[in-house]
Length: 124
Ligand SMILES: [Zn+2]
Image (cartoon, rainbow, N blue to C red; front, side, top):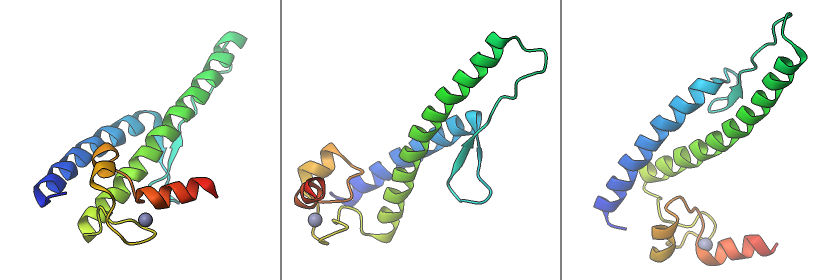
């Protein structure tokens, strides 16, 4: 990947990071104990809530927690990729230290492993 392409990817990732953080901010609080971790806010049931409303807020919480976890994982991946870009190790396989195949990087820009290492990991 050329430096220009990496720059382009970086600004794309920064943009997505901002969107993810906004989304997460709407449904979750940032964990003060663990950096980068988010905790889904629980909408407390009111004492005069009907059973139906109570059930609804639990379902909501579970749905939001699932969404939160997906967003959080994606955000972590993006942060890791940004770190690798900054450190100049972007596009290098984390395991064997060889460059990741150009085709693979194009298809999955967040890939950390080359094709053969990824395959090996899936087998074991
Ligand atoms: Zn590898």
